[in-house]
Length: 407
Length: 92
Image (cartoon, rainbow over all chains, first blue to last red; front, side, top):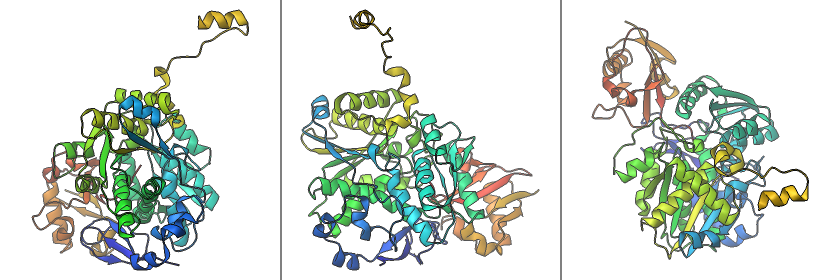
């Protein structure tokens, strides 16, 4: 059963058939999935959603697949946690963490987009899948496409964290470490994608792939009791997630699942790679690309593809943007661990650090509901905190040695 | 003078399906004009009505984004390689 009419250029509105294409031939604008919302409304109700298994596929009609999903069947519906200790630490009344650090199977929000992309790649008849990645996407494509039986080519910047490299290699794909930053990897992949007939999940499958991120937003709303929070702090790399979270709110309003959108969206980046937050803070018309230099490697995209739309989402919602230093990122990772017992990767340090800053600045009022996006797992980026968390007490296996150590 | 230009898939219909063409020009602006001379109509796909490179197109000279150089005034020399690439791609 299909709920997708085709693709449509987000800039000029030209329509295209459902194919593995991603840019408008005329204006080079991005192609987006064009849904048949009237048909979806007849099928998808709150009652229907609530009757389904607790995975991202409970919103299936709002995802661009025509057949059944083939992988990631347990992906999504990660915890939305009321963070009471963190509320005290930050002096706010109502704070939640949407915790995709425990997403299945590879512990980041990327499992959502990859599940959709691979279903689509299969529908299109591809035998090989590929991606350009800063790590989390690499992990998810490597793991999930082995299940789906694809040949796999994965491209990463050569300086990635060891956890992300091992977390890719273990699934035995062809892993290509490119000597350059993510933007260079991405440019190379765009050229490879023109030459090789592969399903590049974030290039020619991108219109479909990106839709998977909406489920992160849908879940926040459902888990809050079909209510949107007042503030959401979202990490930005290419700017796709924040754009799709904003879209998820609008779609749920159009579907009649929520009465109104009274939510401000905040873009969050590391200062060492902040083209999106800088554009918002300085009210620039265009994004100035940068050469990234930050420990938040998963967010180190200096030339964000969806940057203009990320800015659009923030502005339309009445939100704002902020960026944090590498030191602030580490502090925030430690704060989250020491208050809520959650070990997030650097991107989670970026969002929590940003939330703290925005609360201190008074941009986010202390008495309104706040959701901080935690999109990845700290075990993958151990280098970021390795030398900043103390060391174990090393003792002899004897009682007096223990007592001496703790005295 | 010969500069190699890689043509993105959406524009290959206008270059008789050629993926690479050899052109000349002392800077990006002139190169685009030379492209237009060879393949009439292609310029308006790369540039907007004011003649500025469209915001969803990235141009690279020997792998470097021209926005880090001198934009469309970036000078070119014999043997340079140019890539014209749709901006919409990627996501970590």
